[in-house]
Amino acid sequence: MDEVSVLAPATVANVVCGFDCLGFALSEPCDEMTVRRIDTREVRIINRDDYGLPTEPEKNVAGVALLAFIEAAGIDFGFEVEITKHIMPGSGIGSSAASACGAVVAANRLIDDRFTKLELVELAMAGEALASGSRHADNLAPCIYGGFTLVRSTDPLDIVEIDFPSLFATVIHPQIEIKTSEARAMLPKEVPLKNAIRNWSNLGALVAALAKADYGLISRSLEDTIIEPLRKSLIPKFDEVKGASLQAGALGGSISGSGPSIFMLSETPESAEKVGEAMSAVYTTTGIDFNTYVSQIHPQGIRFV
Amino acid sequence: MDEVSVLAPATVANVVCGFDCLGFALSEPCDEMTVRRIDTREVRIINRDDYGLPTEPEKNVAGVALLAFIEAAGIDFGFEVEITKHIMPGSGIGSSAASACGAVVAANRLIDDRFTKLELVELAMAGEALASGSRHADNLAPCIYGGFTLVRSTDPLDIVEIDFPSLFATVIHPQIEIKTSEARAMLPKEVPLKNAIRNWSNLGALVAALAKADYGLISRSLEDTIIEPLRKSLIPKFDEVKGASLQAGALGGSISGSGPSIFMLSETPESAEKVGEAMSAVYTTTGIDFNTYVSQIHPQGIRFV
Image (cartoon, rainbow over all chains, first blue to last red; front, side):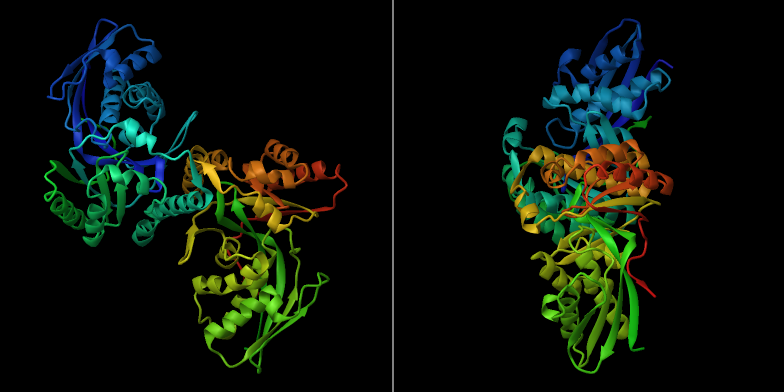
């Protein structure tokens, strides 16, 4: 086997009260990636889309992840990777994570799955660090494990797979740019203990509710009094989108990653579709281009094709 | 039926990363309580121990809870309650919660269990407010529900029963006094966002680990970088007790409630016994009187006798 093709899914991180730890995998959109073994110990990037991402491996998220992979595997050959991105860079639904994860998962299959999932996340973190400037794994973990994951710690890396029931996500991606530096500058250095307690009570309840399939409790726990009130100002019509989504039957939701995408969770696909219509109705009034996605929370992460 | 007797168990609140929300019920020590119906619409307290607690109902935790109960039930009779406390007041293992919960659970049986568990916690909160000056439910919830409980919110009251595996607790109660006001004054108004994130990641992981019976993850998640570093100074030899407990095989633990008791969790009763010996060995050097308890985490709260 000299070539492996995968679909690398979009992911949602910063799941409401799970800021910086909780994420989940969507079933779509997915990037298409093919990784080929080449005889030289190097990485070659071929972009098959119009995003104009760098082709120098050291400047490309998939490239950096593969360089880390080759180093860790101690192999004397390299990889060519062909990428058709369908997850728009900068959308806030794990575009760079999909590139990094797809590359290392496909390459791993070419060396007989020598690395564990945990090790693959660790390797993909090199790519994610290039994209975001910091080592974090909350999009990488669901991309590789699928479903809901909680990153308890990044050093040492500790990933928890969270049991969850049938759930559907609706995502709206308003095509505006949010600078990571700007979103990061909005984070407070300190938070009131009272709010922090409320947040960890909600996250503990959410994890229990997902395992029990208690949709009422899922809905009540989807509350963020810390990050959302600050960052929502970066996203036009955030309150209107959220309000219309809840009215259309969503369980709850918030900013995906650091935005600009907004996600909402629903118990049924019908409800998720209605939420998509409600979101679209709000955004058609703005003149801002947008995409919406309705997707199952996918129990699998990267799929081989 | 004119008389009901119950055993009201000790409870541990502020379970490490679950500050102000997570608690569990011990199998011992328990208070013995008997509640009798009386024809007059009043509450009479009979103390059968040497703690000298008030017998005026308005100043007694069980009395205040029963007064709230009579009011909410709209009944035209009252109760006499006979209390033999075995949970020492001020020990930090839910002594006042046991009094309040035992009283309302027993009285509820006398009116054919008209109130739900959630409503009983709500009523017992009146008693707890007398004892601690604030409305909180993190000892009350496990006392009434048993097992591990998470109080997601007190207003409105929202209690989550947490699935958990076989677990054992070792408690050491050093007989020193910690003033609630002093322990409260140590709480920071604000906490670094970084520590708060670490804490909610740990609590999310702990809830998942309890449901999965993943003892390794339970152990790794039992970490508190916010409250313990501040409050441990109130308890002599805290670090030594914790260190010796971990060395004896404990999964982890911390201050019970706001102290002075320290609790540690273990996977097996043998390990919990060893932890008790290790704790005692540290405390015998101090000249401070102390008790230790080794107990299953009890799936039931209050038991009828």
